[in-house]
Length: 289
Image (cartoon, rainbow, N blue to C red):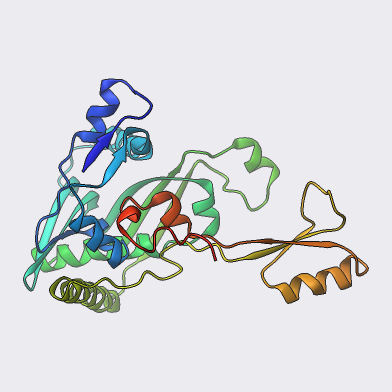
């Protein structure tokens, strides 16, 4: 991967962004890589040496690294706690690897530290965290025969505001949020099938030199919206409708039949802003409806 420095940031930033060699290895996948869309996995691997990443885009990862390092340094040395443990297991001809922030063998929990935004917590969508934690549990079971029973993810919100917490009923009450999940026996069967299906699909496309389509969800599609303004020139929309029919109904029922509708085209945010390999993907330029 090529590292650029468009803002001419000082050398410590450049060294941090360049420090790790994440070059892909055949038939070896990390837990976090397996969470990506399969099309993105394949393109990242194929064009790894040509993909560019700017130093400024590494800042979110820098925050995460700093948090992990501080918490790791302050983890007590106890027999039942394993900090920053690297784990892996073989699944057929493939290897799945991961690095667990903290293992507590007394309560049989897998613990992970996250830095995120308030919006992530307010959406209450933790499916990706669940998959990540279950993959760790599966590797531990395959390699060590240990059956872990709980996931604990500690989310530190970088943009949390005490003022908003006091004045809003649905805003997180603290700058840290603890997400917990109790692992059932059936979860081990579920994640084993999920992993094997995903690896099988990756290998199929590698063998046939094909690319699967990303879903709208994987591309973070916003969907087209219809903004209703009660009168032309209003600075803010009175209502945001998901369909044109809903927009017209709002004007009829709430605006006495008068109002203006502005169409806000849907876009694929992942492709436009967050996918390093979009320039090598013919879908990358299709950001709008």
